[in-house]
Image (cartoon, rainbow, N blue to C red; front, top):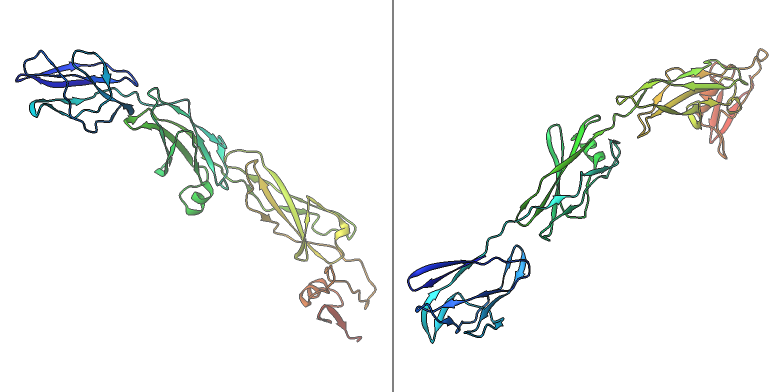
Length: 339
């Protein structure tokens, strides 16, 4: 801080070292360069130094006592103007600093389904100024999102929405760069990276055997690949004649009858998320037990519950049997005319 004032016709500058919360006294000097000026006019003179409140005070003539009356910038003595006092302050701001490297949660790999990838870091300012943190998210093509938050707050990136919009793709590197800033300047930025997960892929699963006996269990198995070389596990489900849902790699024979069609589905998981479900190309057909010529065996057409089967279910169930084309279904009831 320094004060400039007129002594006679010459300007005089006085350097005044200050500290935080100091009270600053300003002395006006008469034209004869000997008498302390005491008759200050009043006016608002509050300001700040380095972002901190400062009180401008005055010294009374020869007394050394300090009062808190605010000063004007023009000096008077009974209405006679002797000079104008100009004041300004200069200070060197210390930029805020990050307290460490930013962190991500989840870290390392982020699933394509993640809606709140968190970037977080704290910061400090030796001057005690308020701090803003600027979070800039970017991919290989540039900035995809920028957030400015108060120190102590986090920033979040909706990866799932970015994937859906085509802004991000699987396997892409994502960077979170954080810059601390106070009212007077920015500190040094730091960053952290992650990459978007490559979802696992399952090949079409296989069923073994493809022609099981009515009392024989069937097994579903799958292989696949992962762009990040993650280990893959698989979950399986089954349908019988296109309906139902049975979980597990093995389907017990108690769930089906002769002549029914069985298909399996496999879903891969790499420890971060599921890949797309894959369905077996071939359907297993349960071997029907032998029957005497002309013998017709009715079933529930794989329908369970309180309602009977549909026409389509029975057409499928009786396909290739002596009942093929002979059964009519109305409101869940099967009708057959004796030949």
